[in-house]
Amino acid sequence: MIPAFHPVWEHTDPDVPSFADAHAGHGNFRSWAKLTAHTVRALERLDRDRVDREVLGSVFAKMSGRSG
Image (cartoon, rainbow, N blue to C red; front, side, top):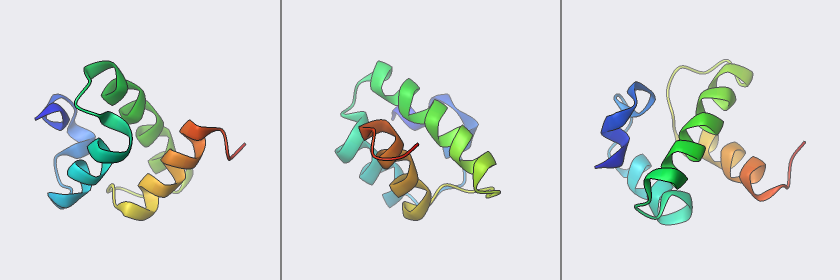
């Protein structure tokens, strides 16, 4: 599983990485690298310590260009 390559994904509910893969990762290492980088920044910006679907919503918006 691609999330095993970065500690940001270690303590997430197992459905979160699956949801992320279905919507942005697509089983592709390059996509996961981009997704992970945006996720790390979102966690810092939102002052959160764990990835959940709310954090992913912010990440997906950023990746699609819908947020500033």
